[in-house]
Length: 270
Ligand code: 2HA
Ligand code: ZN
Image (cartoon, rainbow, N blue to C red; front, top):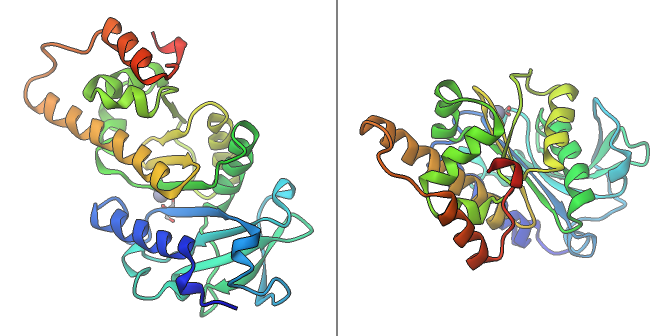
């Protein structure tokens, strides 16, 4: 077996959690990430037959049976991942009953996967239906998006339009827009199901007064998606502080952008 700490996926997880912490988007135990691993890669680092513990889940994830994930630990701080990956992260496989996971590495000292595992696994299932290459689900408390959820209209169309208009790049990065849930209790199957439903259409989903979910093929893509939306929310904050919009990106500009970059913007948002 190769050393897990040399596994590219683990290195990426350490890098991203450290960045999210430094950006101020994951205070204390805020945020969680799940990374669907390639079986032929992960089995170079962990022994499929050596289950350290079996950990129950509060929902049925039978669509994911036998799949391997690298997942941040419940109650763990992103701040601490780099210094102690084996305590703060875990490599798990969804067990044959679909209602528990087998721990193959990590969660040292009795830890378990993030309390948001329902939202993560249900989102993976939803995204895999529309994009077989989706591998990452990422949640964080991005500051300006969170702030905007208190001050801005919360319909996906109006919210998305504002973000698109704050930065020319946005329409190209998330042409389908941003999904928005009502306030729901974190950690529940209810918020998991609602997030997954949105994930059939959107790769970014706002949890008002809480944070943001992103999904993508790679760590970089998913981080970049959240980063781009959060940057637009930050610009919006400055624009409001400077007295509001005086001129804007027009629908004609958006159409030119879409043509230039070969993206199809959500037609319901025009
Ligand atoms: O795990 O961010 O939503 C801490 C959270 C829960
Ligand atoms: Zn959260």
